Image 1 (cartoon, helix red, strand yellow):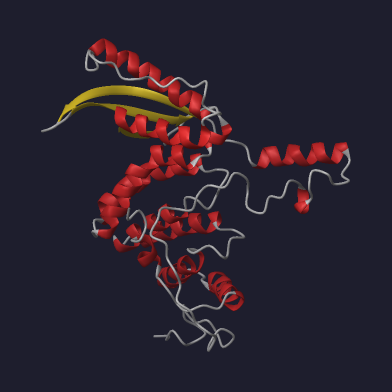
Image 2 (cartoon, one colour):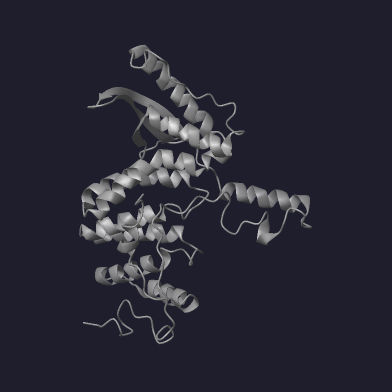
Length: 316
């Protein structure tokens, strides 16, 4: 069998990268990278030109037409499909089922999630801290002193919460905010990564496959945002001995990381993909070349593996 030091085996980095100075790689313990308000590298115009450049009106129109087509926003529709009363030992509350679908075409990947009224309250409070002016005309359905569990009240609140989400999503700054993203995805992602840490890969994968499509739609403006979740999908498939599906998930994650070689997941993902491609009998030369090039430009100690990075997500 070829060894890791032999040029014909995965993991070989060649003499160019051997003997370089090595430092410990850091891995944050928070969730995925925050969405950016604009594409990475955006400076206000083509090739980094500012809005005061000497481009003609026609050239500007053509450029922005092209940009609009490339960064076409995904439009989502929110529906509060149902509500039920839950009675716990020390509390009683209403759980609302939210269905999120993409408009304009048949959506086979609709997202279904559940949130309590208190979750909506937390969202409103967090948005008021950063977007008070933007949401000043958005009405949040408040609590009543009595009758909160009546069928009539629950029905009215379902409609009001649906309208609340619709109005929030219509505001560009809020639509791209960390607050709304966390409200719609963080509980499921925390559950999934918790199962991953516990070695419950099937449960983790089931939750991830439900939340990742929604995460991708909410972060079209920041393609790298779903990478930690996609890498977790890779780890689950790989450890469940479903290598072909793991490789497909890894390819999706790599597409999200185009031109983002400094991303903390880039090298660990490439290393895992090289080994998996080798075991599947796939051509791993191009992956190995990308890995070597990245290590040449950014020499570092072999730090955390892809799985070690994944289990550090959503610890708080």
